[in-house]
Image (cartoon, rainbow, N blue to C red):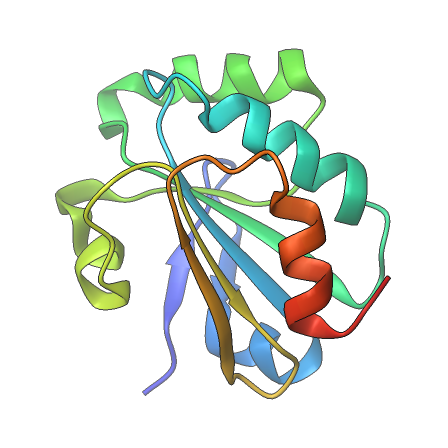
Length: 133
């Protein structure tokens, strides 16, 4: 069964399909998380312009805070898909219990790395896990 979700702009995203085409970085975060925005900035800087990698930011903010999420994304210049994880369904599916958490999938859908908590070497860790530089 394909996982289809809607981002904060109303676009439908099939995460499973994307995993067939690209390396996928799922970043679980929230606007109230101290290091989450810094981590997303680092990921965006390193992978935002790559055609073979997609970042999907999964916010644990509630839908009523979608404007705060949009404002943060705009102020940071993030143009990757952002999903509100209402009811923490995606967090449960992916076994996420704290923020930030990054899960890295290589093209084809094999999970390569799960990183709990903020790590200033996040980009290096992901590049090594995916074998890209």
